[in-house]
Image 1 (cartoon, helix red, strand yellow):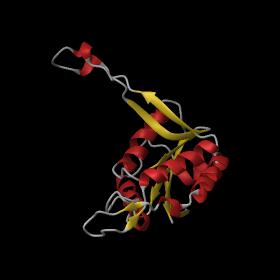
Image 2: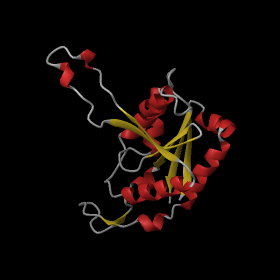
Image 3: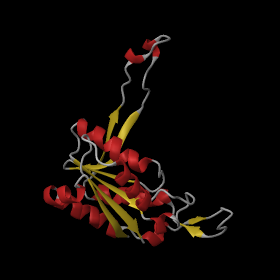
Length: 191
């Protein structure tokens, strides 16, 4: 695969290049190591493209996981503990998180990476919420989000999407940067 788009959110590109160039180099190696042809395995059942071969996001995610793990990147998970203090009705002492957690796909040397091919609505959440939380929990200082560019997303089995690198960048530009945002490099990938 290739990097087809680069967006620097809150100086993400500049900060990562200056402070974590080795980790950025590894991320680029991971992207280059993914043979996209092996993941074009789903036959479309959609009315607009019946029988067309499409990329399988789950298969792509597994390939990314294997490449990151081979380079020593680890998944980081924190359990959510919900406070009963905010309920105004009912017995709050019976409320439990029951295995609820937040997870960063890959972490190494305080750099967090999220790969998002299937759940397009979570792209902005990853950057504006999840990475901020993991920073506050003292796990990461900066992040990298890997997402498909539109021409690649259009060839995925998750259906036609208008939430891809291009829309993601537009959303972030319209939102702007808040005081709590960390530096994040957004990489749009393609075949």
